[in-house]
Length: 119
Length: 154
Image (cartoon, rainbow over the protein chains, first blue to last red):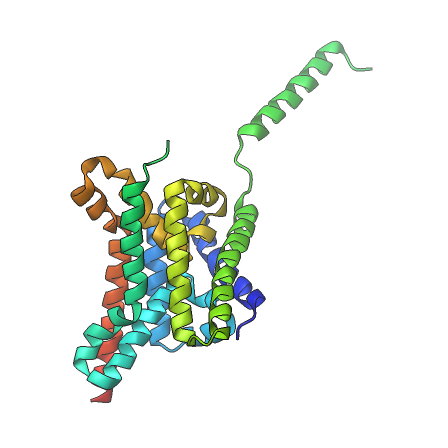
C-alpha cells in the first residue's frame, strides 16, 4: 500500500510542473492545453514503460493527475492487444477508462443542468 | 540640514514607490508553485486515502483506483456547480487543473457557461469543449501504442 505522504509528494510535484509550464508560457498555454498535455504525456510515458514505476512509488499521486488517465488508456490497450490482437488496440483503452469517462460525462451533465452559472 | 524642498521630494519619491509597488506585479511564481503543490498534493492524497481504505476492505487495487477517480470526479463536478471549485482554482492554479478533478471542473464549467443555448446543443455539446480534445489525444495515442505493439508482436 502506498503511504499517503508519497501520494501527496508525487501528486504535488506533478502539479508544480504544470504550474511552471503555465507561468512560463502565460497566456499561450490555457488550462485546456495543460489537460491535453498531461493526458498525452502520461500516455506516451506509459507506452514507453516509464509511467508504471511512478505509479508504484506515488500511487494516487500518479493516477489522480490526468497523466494517470492517459496511463490507464494505454495500459488497457496493451492488455487488450495481448488477448485480442488488433481489435484490442481499438477497444482496450476505452474499456479500461470507461468508468472515469462515463462518470465525468453523466455527473458533468447532471450538475450543469441542476446548477446555474455564478456571477 | 535638509531644505524643505528636498524633504518634499523625498516624500514624493516614497509615495511614488509605494504606489508603484501596489501596481507592479509581484514575483508570484514561488507562491503559485507552493499553492499548486499543496492543493494538488492534497487532492491526490485524498485519492490515496480512498484507495487504501477500499483495498483494506478487500477491493482489488485496480477497482479501488478507478473508484477513487470516479469519486473525485463526482465531488469536483458538484463543487464546480456550487461555485467553490473555481474559487479554489484562482489560488491553486495547476494544483486544481492537473488532477482529474480539473477535468471534471472543465466539463461542468464550460457546460454551465453555455446553458442558455439549451440542454442539448448548449450543455450537451459544450461538455466536450475541453473534455473532447483531451479524450481525442488520449485515444489517438493509446491506439497508436496498441498498433505498435500489434506490429512488434506479430
